Length: 366
Image (tube, rainbow, N blue to C red; front, side, top):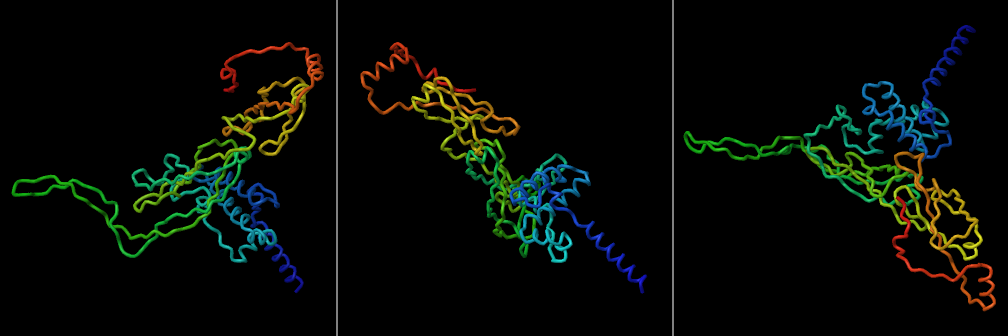
């Protein structure tokens, strides 16, 4: 009996070890902490899914396995209920709870768009073929703030689209005009155009609602396109078009963008203009930028602050510059004769006036 008991304990321990080994560490797979937010999880998934997608790594079984794991990890950690079960009982707890794992390619398409075929459109990996007709693209303006373009941002959009579903019966499809020979009398023939169609299974259009995650990357520019393949208008005999969002930058109260450079204006007092000053301004991501002058600052003077402009889209480690134009606020008061004499004595400056073409003097950085 003692031997049987020991054997039972060993077998039970072995079973638990096997179960523990079978559980995948979803947080480690996505490279996030156990306290990661939904936004952080989504960002990690997007980057890894793009990196290891089989269409981007043809013939690489390791990448295909990682893509499967990445999809499973995101499906669990992005769902609050499943994540709670996983945190308490691991992956085995999800299986016992009857959780069903979805196709990782469907999840990828729901986030990035894609109505079939290769998302990346790599040469031989393109499974769609160029001969099939295609539905129209849908174009939508995506309103974003300058801050969104500086830091990057995710947007969740509920997209409504018609989808073709199987229906009873058949229909005419792939209709085309072909040249046919027709006999008009013995020994005489003529070529005519004739409409010819195939017989295809019948379909009906059903409206579906899907959530699309849009990533606005740091440094994107006005009008830049974010495309979701296969999420546009359907074509009953072919592929759906694309859903294309166009970045539309909203006006910012403090900053104006030109390329990778930022421009702003600061009004200072006459006192600051003459004796100098130091101040801080909040940047687009709320970090502080110190602006200081210890020499006189004339009206319309432009100060260049290096590397405090916009983030470059192609190289996020590179930034443009910030250009600050100063306006001088003069005192709203009248000076007495004694005050005027004191100012003249203090400034030690002769009276001087000049006329010039100010438009040619304006600073326009390249």
